[in-house]
Image (tube, rainbow, N blue to C red; front, side):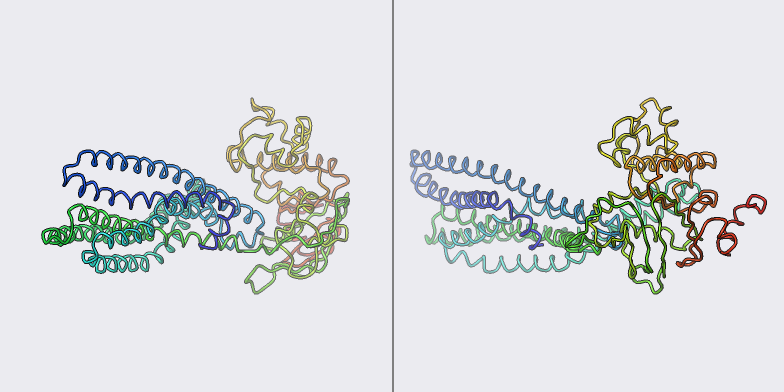
Length: 576
C-alpha cells in the first residue's frame, strides 16, 4: 500500500504539503485552546476580572475561527488529492488491463478486474480522505496533548501510563484479526459480482431451462457467505467501540476524582484541572480516531495489494524494442510449423500447423468442435502467441511488429459478435473513425444489413444496447461484419461469423464480400460446409493438426475427415 501511495501521490506533493501545514495549524490551535481556557478560569473567573474574561474569550473565538478556516481548506485539498489519486489509479489499472493478453485476463477474471478497478480503489480512496483529516492530526494531538498535560500537572499524568497501553493493545488485537477477514471479504465480493454477472448475461438460458431457483440459491449462497464475513468484521467493531468509550469515561472519572483531591490539597488550580481534563479527552479522542482509522486500514491494505497485483503483472504479449514497419504489407499470412498450448496444459492445442493464406484468395478453416480453429486464428492478431513456430505477415514475424500496426491490417469479426452501447453509426465508426454516411451505408449493404437498418426510424442513429442485446443474433453478426468492412483492412478474419444468418442471406453476404475483398486475404472459420465450399483453399483441422488442405473437390477425394464433415451436413445427392 505504501508503494502504491508513494507512486501515485508524487504529482501532488505540493498540495500534500499544504494539507500537512494546515493540519499542523489545526492541531496547535486545538492544543492552545485548553491552555487559554485555564488562564480564563484562573485569572478571570476566579478573580472576578470581567475584562480579562472578555479579552481572553475574544482571543479564543479568533483562534477557533482560524481553526475552522484551516479545517475547511485542509479538507478541500485533502479530498481533492484523494480523488485525483483514485482517478490516476483507475486509469493506470485500465491501461494495464488493455495491454493484457487473453492469458492475463483469464488469470484474474473479468469480475475480479472490475471489482479491483472500482471497489478496491474506493477503499484506498476512503482511507486517504480520512487519513488527511484524522490520521495526520491524531499523532500530533496525542503527543502534543501528553506534553501539555504534563505541563499542567505531572502526578495526575500518571493516569496516561495505564490508559494508553490498554487502548493500543486493543487496537493491535483488532487489526491482527481484521486483516485476514478483509482479504477474504474482497474475494467474496468478487464471487458475488461473478454470480450476478453470469446471471444477467445468461438470463435467457436460465429461464429456458427453468433454472431460476437454482440461480437464486447460488446467489443466496454467495450472498450469505459475504454477509457472514461482514458480520464477523462488524462484531470486532461492536466490541472495540464500546470498549474505547468505556475507557474514555473511566478515565474522565479518574481525572475528576484525583484532580479534585489535588485541587483540594492546593497542589493544582481549578483552571489547570479543567485544561488537564480537556487534554486527556484530546489524547483519548485522537487515539480512538486513530483506532478507527487502523480498523479501516487493513481493508484498504488488502485492496491495495489486489490493485498492485494487477499493476505489477507484465503482459506476456508486448511490442518489440525495434519493431518492423509493415504499413505497406499486402496481407499474405503464413503459419510455419506452429505449436500452441494453453498455460498449464499437458498437450498442445495446435501442433505442426503450416499453410499460407494469400491476398485475393479465401482460405477456409473447418474441423470438429475443439479442433483448435478459433485458437488458430487468434494467433494472427496476437490474442495469444505461439509456443513454437511462427506466424508471418508478408514474411515478417508478427512478434516483430507493433501490435497497433498489426491490428490496423486486420478486420476481425469474432465468434461472439459484440456491439457497444451507442448507435449504429458509433459502432461502425469503431472500425473507422473518419467514416462518412455514404461509407457506412455501403458497409451495411455489403454486410446485408442495409435493409433492416433502413427500416428503423432513426436509421444510422438507432440505439444499440450494450452487447447488442436489443437486436437479433443475425443482425448483430451483420453489423459486426459491416464494422470490419468499413475499415478496408488487408486481412479479413471471420470466426464462424455467418452462423446466425439464413442460407439465402449467407449466399448474398458471401457474394458481396467476395466483390469487396478482391485484393484482401480472407480467412473464414466455419462450421457450415455451405459457407466454405467455394473457398480457394480449405484447411481441415483434426485434434489440433492439419488433416488436409485443398479445394472442396480435392478434399472430397483425399481427406476422410473432411468427407465425414460434409456428409454429416449434406446428402450424397447435394454433394454431387
